[in-house]
Each structure stands twice: as structure tokens, then as C-alpha cells.
Length: 174
Image (tube, rainbow, N blue to C red):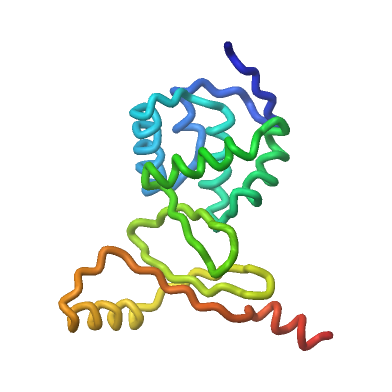
């Protein structure tokens, strides 16, 4: 049974042109090609809904909860289901294109993988804003600590919780 997908303001695109339709950087294009192979290995067929989700996720390049992405995609594909969004994000993680983060007590957030650029996060406890940053000094310190303890680092994540500049200004204005 074939499903008809209504996508507002979007042209129907055959599967073989999907990877050409999404405008991404070279690093993300390689990831997209990996994803298409990974999807095929799992026996998953081309899906317009999945393509829209992935295209939106790549273009936005931000930290999404399943619910946030669902709400944005629902504007493009009104008949999308929450589980389709969740399964697509899980596929992206399983295929190495996305990473899952847990910032404190909040829902899991998914972000596009930036392989050549490790970054850490500042997390606002008031508005939930996430600020990515890179600091060579922190990286050197972590490597030195690992070396001192003869520890092989596979991955690491630094999350600093506090209040962002915008929320501090709002508080002062009240």
C-alpha cells in the first residue's frame, strides 16, 4: 500500500534525488550519504516524511527535543506522527549523524554531529537556551588530566549550567 504524503509548499522528490535536494555542507553531505546507506542496510525504504524531518534537522542545526522538532515539522507535514519524528532521530543517532544529550532534568535533546569540531555547552536554567563553545584550554586540561591518570578518553562532554545574558537582563528589567 502506498501512502500519499501532503507536504505544504514542497515538491515531490524521487528517492534518488533526495540527497541532491538537501543543501548541506560537505561534512553533512558525507553524513547524509552514510545515513542513506545505513537506512538501506536496515531495510528502511525512502520516506518523504523522513526526508522532510532530516532536511529540517540538518538545516536548523540546533538542539531539538522530539517534541520541539515534532511541532516544527507538523507545520510542514500536518499528518506526521510523534513516533515518526522519534524513530527518525533514533535512526540519525544510530547512523552516527546525530548525538543525544541530556542537559540536567530536561528531555533528551538531539544535535547534528560536528565530527571535526568538538564543542561544549552552556545551558540556561531559566529559558533552556543552549550555547555551544570551544575552548582550547579546557581541551588541553582534560587531555593532561587523562594522561596523568593513564586514561584513554573515548569521549567527553562538558555542560555548564547557569543563567544566560538575556535572562539576566530580563530579571534586571523587572
